[in-house]
Image 1 (cartoon, rainbow, N blue to C red):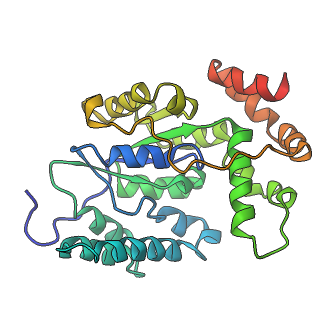
Image 2 (image 1 turned 90 degrees about the vertical axis):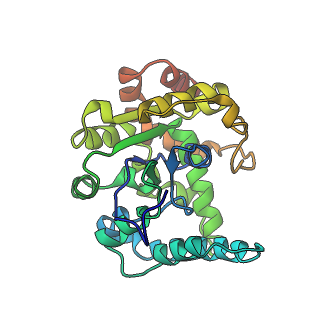
Length: 285
C-alpha cells in the first residue's frame, strides 16, 4: 500500500550508469516489469549530470519535458486517466530541480519495492558528481554494461550525425568528438566509480550477453539486486529494443578509432579476457 499523500521522499536503491548504446533500454524495459522494482516512467532523469556536467544543461530539461509530454498525451487518451501518474509526470518536469526534487520523484514508489534510476550519462560523472550521488543515495548499488568500444562509438557517432542532420556535420567530424571516446573508456569509468563504491556494489555486464544469453544475464542482475528471477514473468527478454539500421563503419573512421581506443582494448583484455579478447581480435587481428 502507498502511504498517505505524496509519500516520504526516498532515494534510489540502484542505478544503471550506462554505457550509452549498450543495452540500457533493454534493461530498463525488463526491470520495470519486475513486481519488486519501481522506476520512473521516463528512463533517464538526467539529474546528476545536469548538476556536474555543465555542457549537458542545454538539453536535460528538454529531455525530461519532451518525454513527459509524449507519455502524458498517450495517457490522456485512456478512458480513466490516473491523476497520480499525471502528478508524477508534472513533478519530473518541474524546472526547480535539486536533491529534494529528485527524492520526491521516488516518493511515488510503493514502500515495499526497490527504486532504480537509469541514466547512462552518469558513467561520465566527475568524482564530485559521484560523491554527490552517493550523498543522496549512500547505500545504492550501480550496474554498468559494456559493449565493444568501437561498436559503441560507431552507434554513438551515427546518433550524433542524425541529431545534426540539419547541419553539414559529417560522420568523420562526429567521430572526433571527445564525448564519443570518453564514454568508451571503460577502465577509467570503472576505476572512478570503484573509488566511491565497495567492489560488491558495482555490477559489470557485457552487451554481448543480451544477444546470446539474455535470461542468464537478467537473472544475474536481479541476483545482484537481491531479487528473485522467474523467466516466465519476462517473455520479452529476447526482444531487441531500438534496433539500429545496419551500416558498415567507414575504413577511415575505423582506423581512427582503432588508434584512439587501442589502450582501452589492451587494458580491458588484461582485466577481463573472454568476450573482450573477442572484441580485440575483431579490430586488431
